[in-house]
Length: 231
Image (cartoon, rainbow, N blue to C red; front, top):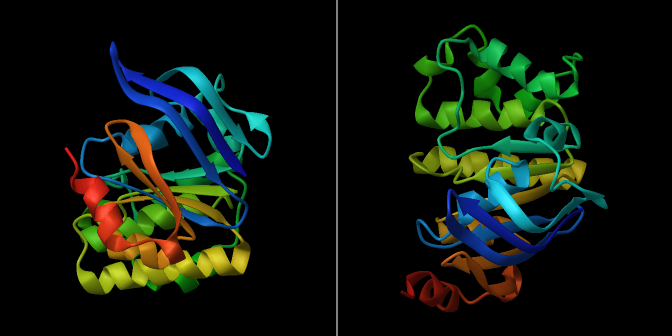
């Protein structure tokens, strides 16, 4: 599905990612964990073409993405839920969902599957996005990314600022969509228990590099935490 090889990324003149190698197989959930500021969000932005990536390769289903602009990468089948959600607060929930359809040329899609995953989204269709709670906005952001039926979903810190009960709902929805549709997911997360519960494999990042790659079922939480706490 997604293959990243030898990727470097820059903000201005500063190199943030150094020789990143990462793979998201078909139908798998892959977690990318690490402390704040080590390059996790930059990795997702690199996949989407939002930062400078002068070296390396990013392939989706065998198609090289590195020289494609962000909108073409989205049309290749990548759904992206950024940190902070980036919903449009003055638009209604329904209007935010319709924006997600721009990826597929505005073609209508049956949203019933999304409403089954996120009942709160259907309940609040007429309400402005800015009037929703943080957890409700997160569910809307994920639903907006899913409405165009991507091949790969990128999730950046979906539990950030969310109350525990909603975290459980989001985790259940992610697990359901993965199992029922085979959607591949790359999950960036600091909440280690949440990441390991969902993921098939886990990559640990530090200082812009991958320092550990393990199967989630074999991962030792203490070992991962040691890498995350290393200076």
